[in-house]
Structures are given as structure tokens and as C-alpha cells.
Image (cartoon, rainbow, N blue to C red; front, side):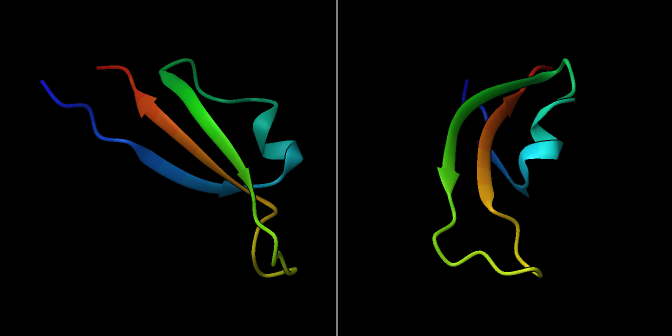
Length: 48
């Protein structure tokens, strides 16, 4: 069984209330973040 790794661009405020079904795996800082681009990329699995 393979689980799909999802990505989400987010800011600090978005990380406070993650859904219960998400399993965070990795958080990367976006070095070239602009107002149009979020500061972080969150990688996560989703529970079935």
C-alpha cells in the first residue's frame, strides 16, 4: 500500500489549526517567499 504525500504552501497562522486527519511529515521554509507566495511548504499524509 502506498500513501500519497500531499503538499501545502502555508504561513505560520495556517499551521495552528491543522485537520485531525493530516499527519505532518516535513516543513520546509521557502527562501524566496513573496506576498503572493507563502513562507512554508508543508508535506503531509492524510489518514483514510
